Image (cartoon, rainbow, N blue to C red; front, side, top):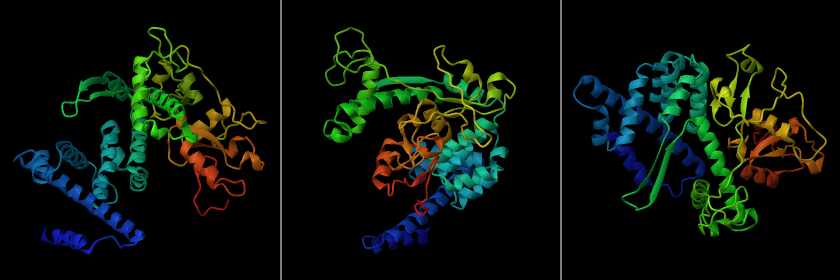
Length: 400
């Protein structure tokens, strides 16, 4: 312990103000690996305490390692489950994956079995490469595909576990809302909030104004939620006319937000000839085919035919803006922004080779980009060619 403390003291004394950024990145990476290895050791301590019968491992971490109760319980839980997953435990102990990656693996193991997860070399490799947020989605998708019932029991459990609360925070005096939804419902709720937030952004001046001088992005999101729930303007408290977002006089008037639940399913899933085929909700991940039976009567269905490699075979052309089938095809292929992974309802359809430079509105020349990255790509476009290929981000050193 003395050597560790001496090493940290040496870093403190040396100072980092004049260290070049590349060296700071290397130092951050090394410290990150060290932190992960320390968390793995703390987990082993918690497991040892629990197995000795001499106390509560999580409590020891909380009191002796000065961790929060939530963090201590999380470290202890992950360590306990990793005792059945030696490959994942070794990767965590070596600093190859973080505690967040390990927690995602543990979550997948709870759904489809520790052995199946721990022995999947591809999944463990992705854990070592992807960000914790991205890998959490990948692990959930893996578990949903591998579980015997295609995740139907888990989704039903999530539906039953839905809850919401509204209370006054005793410390701040602020009113707080909290809610848990199953992932399919959360997809629709998030879309509604995002659409309303975007409308308020435009009302505050949008890209051509100074919207943050009116209210911050977090304030807009809070106001969007208020307006969706109450049907009243968040600033004036006047009723909002249905669908327009303008002040009205009608009592009980509400606003609506367009949203779209895109379910991608193989034909065999729909007609019953291949019940194990693909079925997923874009932005949510794989879902049990039973979700199809729960679609509302007014749900609009669209069919698309793809080749064996996933290339759409029927699409419209001869226009500058992508049509509805092309929007759907890009959504199914790209599943969100090809730069950052933002969900499709926050994305626009981008011409890889600009329309003004002869680019066609064809599926091979289209890609999904969120609003921010769409503007950035237009600003960085050279010679009429965006630095992306359709469906994936391009490396900086790729040829245009």
